[in-house]
Length: 122
View 1 (cartoon, helix red, strand yellow):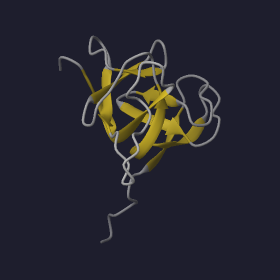
View 2 (tube, one colour):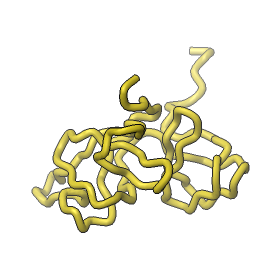
View 3 (spheres, one colour):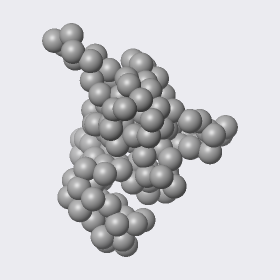
């Protein structure tokens, strides 16, 4: 197919603020996780699809819970008000262990990223 470019799991995006390697960022309507540290206003590689552990607030999640991005705190959250959906929680491992995010004290939540976001209420 002549018009195929790539699978689209990563995108080159201009960072809207300084983003550490492995940290999330909302670039317009695209949520991604920086592959490497990216300075504000610089183009970097962001993972936009796939299973990622994302830094979160004190929210708790179960399998299939919607995960939102709090662009002020720069953290994943379960709070819906004025936050963008970035994917769904995926809490179970094939070996039966539970992924991070189910407890309030977990620093991260395992999220199946969807690539683009939808602001709650749209």
